[in-house]
Length: 290
Image (cartoon, rainbow, N blue to C red; front, side, top):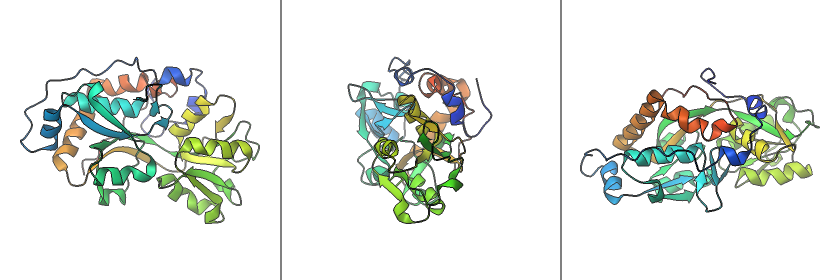
């Protein structure tokens, strides 16, 4: 099923009954690895193709998008986007070096050359574009709230958070976006991963967890019967692929790869084999070739 362009609601996710194990199943068919094109000498594409390997930063704790399997290999839609790009460079999936990347270290990892790409539920915004470049977006989410099952606090929207505590991840756009809706900065409890927000929510130390609706939907699915998504998104979060600032040729190569995948149906296939086990299939957003 394809939805209109825009934010996929977590309500639709909750209606699905398939488990997280299925949605991150590594049996999802791999994209065919291509014979690499004759890339320009000295380009990032040529260097990676010649090396036969690529280093990609992604999250290891994000159900549906990037969740490490028992072997420590991330599974999900972000991981499939990484395999897609690697395949265009002639790089086999086993030659991808996956680096666990949390919200706070995405820009430093790119700037320091520790990774070639970051594909990690990474929202494109103007501040980040000053220090890194983005290809995409390849998906659009929206920030929402996760509460206890049954919503005992009666939180119907972000406007109900005044006087309550909320948990999110340090260095994320979610942390910045939630600030106007709480009474004091100390009402925002920031941690390093969203999974670390679940115990404070269980214990009542916070009334809600906030981040993108697709991430919250994955957490709710992973912990069936414990949590629910409020389903009142209050932002638009275009997910992009981060790479070195001003590496225009590489950015355009990644953009072309994403566009081809959208045009030939590969994007849909990769979505439906990962996040699509829980979430309906949206229309991919238009690529911003800034």
